[in-house]
Image (cartoon, rainbow, N blue to C red):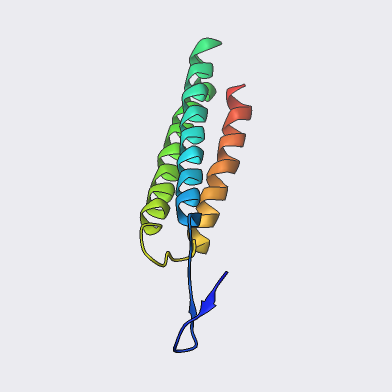
Length: 108
């Protein structure tokens, strides 16, 4: 809840919301890393095929891109008034998730 300050502007009391958001981004990056590792394992386990290796390598690159987006977001949450997630970052994170799904189909 916001309370009006002396000059009429709303004072923001974020509470633990930035910390919860930071932890959510960390959990998501951990999940993305696990997906990339499992893609590599699956590509090697069932016999090495060109499409499987390419999909596993692309999964690793997508994981790195997602880690960059998440790290930038986690760093921005350290501010007293964090900025909103940019449209570009949100689209890149969504594209990474869709790419992971596509590469999973190729690896399997």
